[in-house]
Amino acid sequence: MKSLKIGAVFAALVAMGTPIAASAATAHNVVLVPGAFTNKHSWDKVAHLLRAKGFKVTEVDIPLTSLDNDVAATRAVLAAQKGPTVLVGHSWGGVVIGEAGDSPKVKALVYVAAFAPDKGETLQKLSAGGPPTEGLKAVRPDPDAQGFLYIDPAAYAHVFVGDVPAAEGEALAKGQKPISGAAFGAPAIVAAWHLKPTYYAISANDMMLSPQAEAFFAQRMKATTVTIPSSHASPVSHPDEIAALIEQAAEGK
Image 1 (spheres, rainbow, N blue to C red):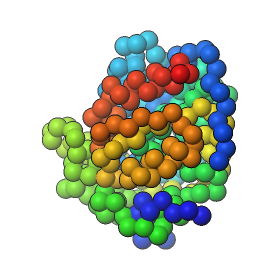
Image 2: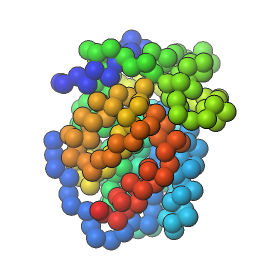
Image 3: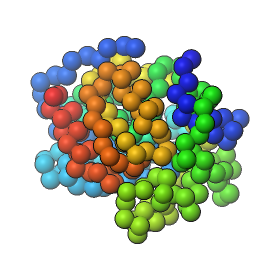
Image 4: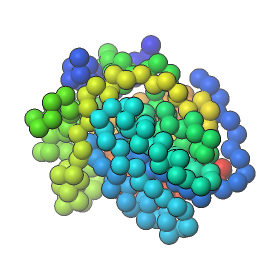
């Protein structure tokens, strides 16, 4: 399996199909899945912009206790949607939407600085064989939850939200949700990007997931791709660009 060289830190911390064509109908529902080391409110700015344009937006509160649990939480939200839906994932959320995105309600998938494993791949294996990014070097075992990981709060503002105002970055650091380390060893089963039109926003200044890895995922999926001069937290620092890509996916352009 090809290594993306996105950091062997996961291994230390925890023991090409062609997409179908988009339909002409505009999706009026958007489901937003957050990544690890943050929470659903990281999507608030994007959600506000989309709601102002008439979209029905739901931010999923994934538990980050396992891939299965995160997928179940996302599928429950998708089941409540009425009509075509754009499913969006940031960072770890890309793994989640790849599993939940086979729902017939999902019109398109949008990956935002996100992992996009293929069937059988795990983040642990994808990360093996290369040096960790600066952000992954700041990942620590959570002292309050055995088996969970979090980002050192002292490093969070720099490695995760480097282009966000300091006060906002500190608030995001305090609100981060740890993720179960075992989740990184869970293999992808569905990889719905084989089945649905796909869009990808690369964060050019990402210190968590390397921009080169993001470009690999986007190219492998044959995704409609934009590159944003952003930190890993592009939904927070560049909400206009992310909202515009989601709107493009909703319209099938």
